[in-house]
Length: 436
Ligand code: HAM
Image (cartoon, rainbow, N blue to C red; front, side, top):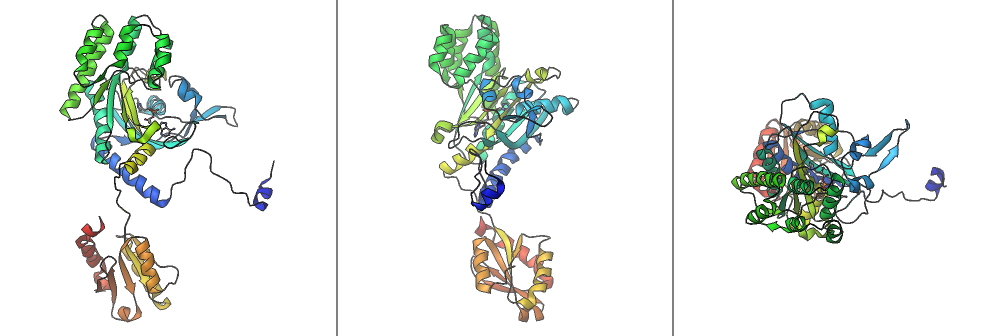
């Protein structure tokens, strides 16, 4: 094996791990802009941010996450011989945290998170080994309104950033109820749901011979299909009750003006779902078209050692949302800074630093620190999208003033140093429209 010294001598470039990405300042500006837009919707529904560790005890995800996730986990033994993994999803961590710390808080708890997840999958466009989840969990309510609220938040967040998408809602309580009534155990139920999730009709037909199940999961459409489902399920009490539950949730969504399709074939790759489930897709994204997944999971908290506590939530695949914005040609405003300060010679540098320091209490200010000529500083100012340049020259300074240049129009004004903040504020306000 080569030593570090050998690597340095051979000038071998060290690559980033497969399936991970670097984000440039431009990328981060775009991602933060979108994050804030989505966050603003979460906050308007009174959700509060939480954070949990990047690494977790591997058992947390072995309890109820399902084969697919387990297969793709990054697992390692730490120096204390504990089996640790990089978190592949957030819901189990949030439930662990709830049991640890939040159990005594007034319900319902409305929580959101934005953090990277890790899954050792085969990387391709839209599928990464490190990717970001932005999601919410609503803990402590089993009401129809809480399921409707969660779906509405996902829908409105995506509308808020201007995306076009398809929302499909199903209900695993219906399917699980039906399968239980037909005598199918949990293990088979999980397999059925996993095949549904992968759209693997062949394997599905191999394990299910029952026509009612096959007909049910094929049902997809508007509210008109509810009648068909009722007919199919009329002799199966538990499944029928869950169908009525779904109806109630949909009624609330209608009040909020949410556009959706019902799809009884929505499966989900995670095993903890017990009730309503939903997915959001943008077909133009190709094979990785699902940008959001969620649903109700009423048993997970109890399975993790807590009191029986109902919960519901979802997670956006944030990276796929960024890809979708690009595909749908949705503009993200450029980043601007307020001012570039241009000292015209070395003699005025100290005054320039003093002025910059004062202005930074209020504005976003850059300043030339390369002793460049005025022309070059203005070029740099254009490059970094400065709205104004503040030119500081010896003559002006001797009269207690500086020159404010509008970078877009080229118009210049002399301003007294004592009036700088007010005048710059005024100019920025007057030119707001120019920099949208
Ligand atoms: P999930 O469907 O496994 O659900 O993940 C949510 C979203 O993460 C997916 O819809 C997809 O957009 C994105 N995603 C998944 N894997 C990758 C990947 N390798 N690269 C890029 N994006 C990916 C969950 O994890 C649940 N915890 C959601 C939830 C929250 N359910 C209830 N509360």
